[in-house]
Image (cartoon, rainbow, N blue to C red; front, side):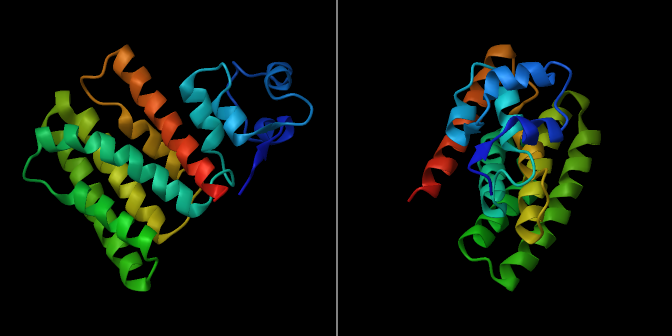
Length: 194
């Protein structure tokens, strides 16, 4: 788990063309920035989230926690479109159970729920094209939450972060969702100090 991001680290993660090394150096400085300073940078929320979701920035538990936050926000969109399909919610619940008690039983439950939620994502995608984006991301987020409760992977939070985008979201709604994710990440990082 990192407490500070450096230019070298960010460049090793291969940022997009918007962030050549010169710009990263200007933003990060010679000594790097703490995670809370990264979250306060004057760059898009999406890019701040990208920084926070690189490998080894968040612990495995923090990745799962962030994925759960994102999935919880997007579940209402999925459930409006598919009120009888409980698989994504069950996957998020299983991930939360693992987070509070990382037992083998909860790991297996989370893994099983992941497969069910993934199935829900595919069902939703083909059920209605107009609602599929919201449903797929909600279900994927839940699947990723459960999956990473069962096994570690560096991209869990990145995929979960995209779950906050809903089918009916406009640019302002997306901005609000990203800002909420930034606040969730701040809470996670601040909780480290306790």
